[in-house]
Image (cartoon, rainbow, N blue to C red; front, side):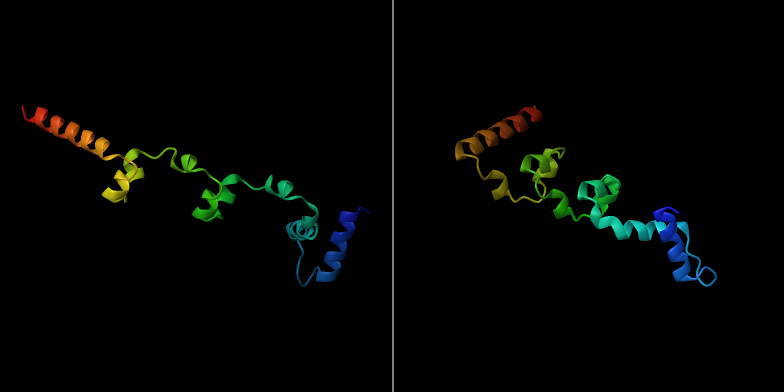
Amino acid sequence: MSSIMNQLFVKYKTEGVTAMPYTIEDFRRDYVLEYLDRLTPDEILKKIRADELVKRLSADDRLRGLSADDRLRGLSADDRLRGLSADDRLRGMSPDDIEAYLKKLKQKKKSKKF
């Protein structure tokens, strides 16, 4: 008798077939749990769909290890700026750049009036 069949027989005998049927699904689950520690994490992860893994991770865990560029990829400029104060938006720009941009906006506004 094969080792698996022998283990299944022992489980049936232990559980009592008439009192509580022990199904092949029960056996498979118990067998996997008993030998799970012998598998590498990669072997285990191969059997789990990516969408199932992602569901179990928090947003912080999903973002951990990503560069700022990777985090921002796919976001529009409006989405990137949403929630930032004017000070935060202008930080890193020189006063000359800010003035040049404001001048450009004023010229656009004037040209639309005419």
